[in-house]
Image 1 (tube, helix red, strand yellow):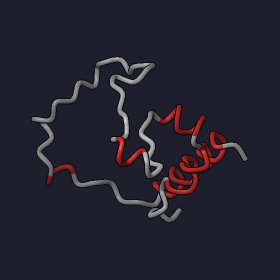
Image 2 (cartoon, rainbow, N blue to C red):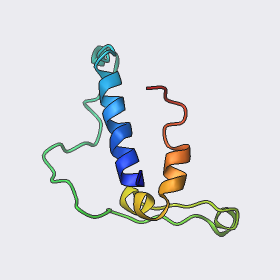
Image 3 (tube, rainbow, N blue to C red):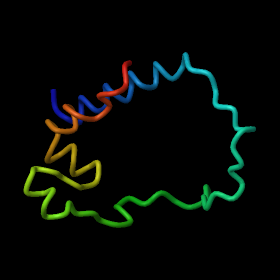
Image 4 (tube, rainbow, N blue to C red):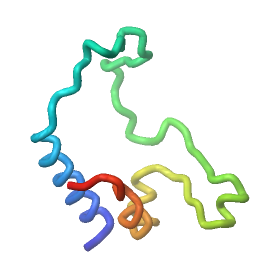
Length: 87
């Protein structure tokens, strides 16, 4: 299975699991001051880039966007992404 296919299956499993969860209680969170603009168009490309610090890169750390992670490091995404979740 490709990393992309694995990620899609993981998303589907998470969506099925969410159906049985309770809705969050937004009354406990004052979100009115959050700097979120829900009318803004989603960007097709990353708004910024990140790079692992040299000392972490030397140990094998990778910092990249999801598309690159799935395309170039799918084995690592599959190994580590969502490992604490059980669905």
